Image (cartoon, rainbow over all chains, first blue to last red; front, side):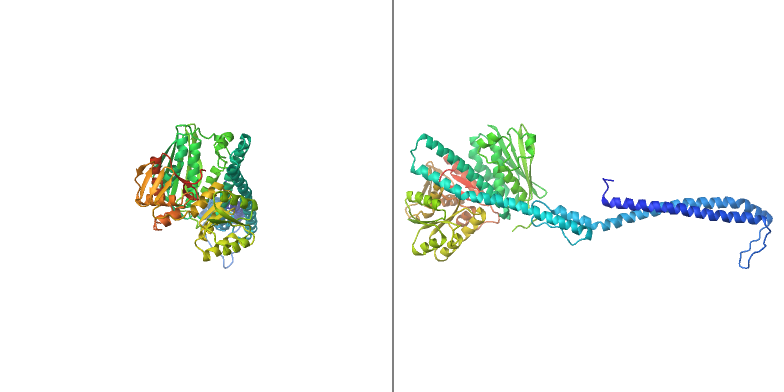
Length: 391
Length: 225
């Protein structure tokens, strides 16, 4: 009975119960009914032997039959009794079936009605998503059985959102605390280079390494901070997509030329609501990745089209493709397909996870549509007019 | 040219001051909000490099009280706090520029230079940056000595970027100064003109002199990243 819904279970159980009681009732009724019929028959048969009209009371119906008629009656009577019994038996079963079916139908609707709180409850629970974890709570003003349940779910949600919040804050705070020492290190290195331009090759080497790593750390800290602050950015700009794409391509033309990759833009003009800076970041990161992980002489195509109120943006490259086992993970923070290579390319491993976070904030989705040795297509789907009122 | 550096991290303050002195500015230092507030009311300075997290009077408060009586002193915010909110709040309160920690001293110098650059005299109408030049009077653009045909808006953008070279200029700022604030509701209507300007300059120069720092603005000149 696992695959049946709750409503059907109640209906079937009710119908079964009613059917069983009807059958028992039916059998008992038939048993006693046929007993009385038979005793009536016996009486008539007994009576025919004794003297006729002996002691009929005043208020009894008096039927006078001739001997021939009476003989006929007597011969037909047991037959008639038998027919009645059969009729009684059959009708009993028909009625049982009808009553069972009817009560089953009624049970279906009644249980549907009384299960309404459950449906409301699960609809509310479905509303809870990552984005609204902080605000989403279930209604505790419900029937007693669910009251305790929604209370415990609410408590769980609260703990969960606190944990998420704490994690976000921790990242933000840690990155924040790293900024002043980093600023100090960077300023010191800059100053040293200016004040002592002629140092020994060993010192110059050390300084160069320190500079490079400080740069890397600064970059990392900046992205971490950006990520922890994403939610505070208003997402209410009206954005025309194709000028934005054009600008991303303009920004990345030097990189593309360096890597001998050609950039193409196709698709239709469309607009959407969101954060200009954040969505720019999404497109920039996707195209930048597509250029970096491409082959020499390859191409990157970015296209945009509208599909039932959604802006669908595809970034296709001609790179070597992403192995299937990595596909699920590439949007995870610090995940890298090829660790040595991406470090050599200067990444910190947060580009795609930033994309994922931003798209999630805009109630959209991002995924790898296809990836083979001929190239990879990443598709971003964004609602043109998100429902939520933000700021 | 007199600058004031307000920063509570002593070593950083000293290094910033040292590098700015090297660049030829007179630099005073304050390590907390109260002394900075006293210093500002006692002595005139042209530019203040201001950290927001200060013991005593808070940096933002300091900025507001300064702006209530003085609109000419330039203020460059140097902050380690939340990037987005601080930047918006700081610029709204009257700061001229914003630089997040950690930063390069070169970058800071370029921003300072951009802010304290004296207004151009009548004869000084030629703006240059590398092989690129723009004549503010005839409104002619030359790339490597060859004229580049720009639309009126493109020329306006280029002029503004060159006037503020070394400092990223946001789209909002460009809209306000080049467009007179009259644009449609789209956040990025200026984008088309910038992209087209950049393509033309690139065709003339062989490289794109304009850099786009996401979330900060467009930049001509200044130190390389």
